[in-house]
Image (cartoon, rainbow over all chains, first blue to last red; front, side, top):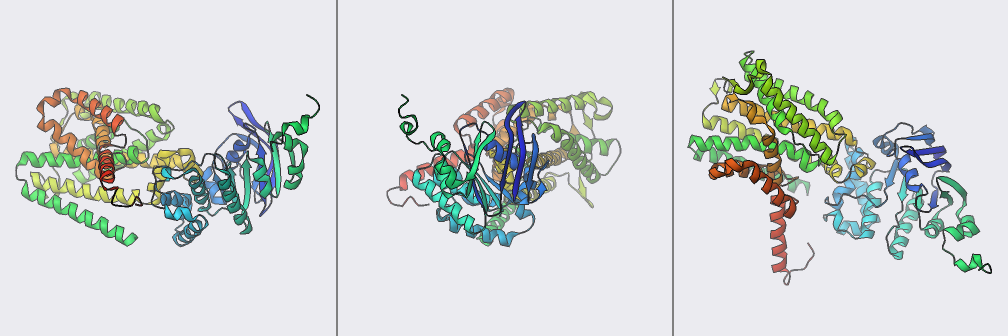
Length: 247
Length: 327
């Protein structure tokens, strides 16, 4: 569904991603893990067209995304849940959700938008209770749910999530990941960027490990969870386990 | 739900129109009628800038330029070329839209202070143009003999005729703006205000929408300029200088950012205030500066919103023991 080949991204003259290749198949849940500054968010923003200067190839359903602006990419069926949620705080929850369907209102798709709104509110019942409230008054977990709901309102086929677990209590992380699994069951394809590698790999089919703008490891999630390198660097296994006897 | 909201807004406009008619019928003093007519013109100006500044969050410190373009275009068309005024209106609106579009393309790549500086710059340029292009604009001595407006055989030069025309236009502008604000475009404008990046991620074509709202806002200013020129029948560059731009910004800030009805309040306050306090006119700039500072520091949402917030806070404090917090 999504195929990236030899992608290089630049911030001015600084290269943030140097030659990444990855693929996401239909109805897969892919985890992209890596430390701060590895280039994870850059990668997602590039796919969404928010970062205009890149080289290489990004194909979505066999069509190149080169030179496309964000609205066109949203129209193609890719939605981003951005890092730090980027909600519109003074606007009501309902207005935030409606903004997610911005392009569909233009196509006079009101009836289906209404249906999807109902579906999103069913998926996140707490948003229904707060629908008239300003988005800025929600708690962190509710805001994350709103950001996800907003992205779903565009009726994407590929959902990109940038660190949805950031700053959330463990049970909320669980809740968010459960929703992702539910979406996957309904046929959604998901590319999940996470620092919380364990949680991400537990629900993902496959995973990629990004380091300094390059993919250093890839494979089935179960393999990655068992991998020594991954364990040491990302899963926070006890330091002792690896360095026993050397100190 | 939607039906109810519609009925509410219909009621609101019916009441508003009724109060306009009653005011026009009740106020017979020509001086006050003219003052009220000016408020109407300023309301159109403030409303236009509010769409740009209050909703989309793009500041313009040069809106007097579009106000001036509207006034000068219709004045030149009617005085020099003997066009009928209504044709002058079309030319004014069209020309303003084109100029605003051309200015917006490079200008709206700027944000924040830089956008303020840029718009300030073109405001200055147009002021100098009005003053120095003597062959066309009459220079500092201005343009005299702009004909009054007429509809059919009805000449709108008496105070009440023009009053009804201006306020009729105000009502129409209110309806247009309210419809825009409550549509998907209005939501997108507010989204741009909060975060352009997030708005783009939602699929909003931010640069196009910003140019669009800039042009809309300029056309409103041009309409106000047209109404002004045919009301006073004499225009000079000083009516469109820097301080006028600041006055419009102050109206928006006092009335409240992102508040359609606030524009009416802001325009009223800033028209009545100098009239009631004659001392005020000498220190106009000082007072505007003070108002802007005080409102920005203490009531950043604008005067109306700030007052409402204070009221709501007070109410919830007094009623807390009896009612549940669920709102």
